[in-house]
Image (tube, rainbow, N blue to C red; front, side, top):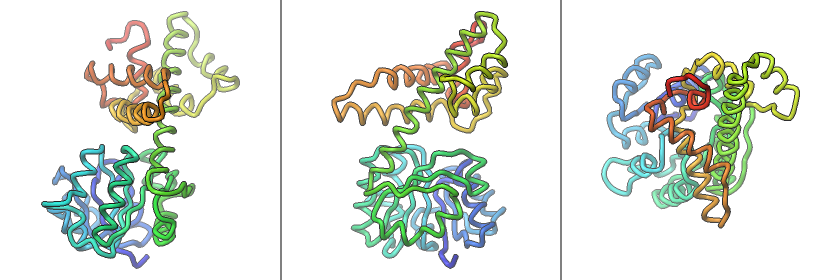
Length: 294
């Protein structure tokens, strides 16, 4: 636990990962976010530095965990000029946890190596509670030697972690995970919406779903929220749309038609169009239940 760990991107996931490592005895050396007030608040809580530049995070840290929102954000923090995590990065290890395009992870690894650093993709298939409790499911990609170097740290964040392979491979698997999850979510919303329109008792329907081929992990996490219109955000509709887009792009590169992925992306895109994209993905039910405002 001698490694000093910095964080870039301290929203709900990044902040709770930082809290978890602090509890486990790691020195959280610096936190950074484009929302400076969020970084300052977390820095005060953890007794660390709210860095005002990316280069400062690198300067203060041995390992830097990044949790940004999209491809453009990733390219920005690893820019070849201006303020960048790559400034003075020799000997550092970057663990990049955002759900982004696999090609961007590959490019990030190449840029890190050119700067004398190492990069690992740490794709997460869990949510806020698991980030805080250290029970994330992590899919790791990059050089195996880099994975081995930070495996102990990763074990404090995850009770289930899987080394998938070279850079880009973990991101491919994560795209598939989210694609299937999003299809299941949109499908469940349609099933419950139709059940409600038919006047069926939704508790009875969900119980039967859980005992039959209609069962899914999404039924457990989102079913009651769809019924109750409780869409507190753990994974937003906007993020679902973005991640389905990543999977569709991978399919196009392989010459595959993925109509179910395209249809579910369309539903999450519609959430954004209707101004409810920042609701939890369970909010897709607002599009399918009769009489709801969306």
